[in-house]
Image 1 (tube, rainbow, N blue to C red):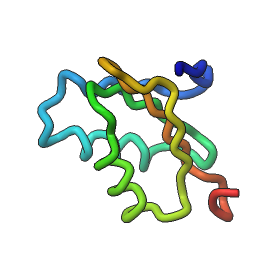
Image 2: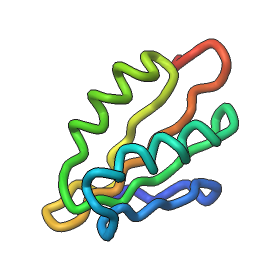
Image 3: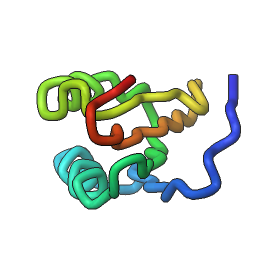
Image 4: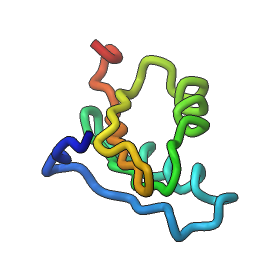
Length: 87
């Protein structure tokens, strides 16, 4: 299933980046988001390891929404939660 992307979200395509730097780049972009801001990550596989890392690094401080789920492309919206956490 494909969902429309929010118009204010920045898209970050990591498919061409070396695996060793993908998560670092994504976390750098996420850290720069304002509260309520979102980032769309485009990847060539299901980014479950990234989600587990977000659970560890930012518990309750983000929302994760699949916009596209393979088989060739995954698009995930990662939104910085407003103050007070995910509601």
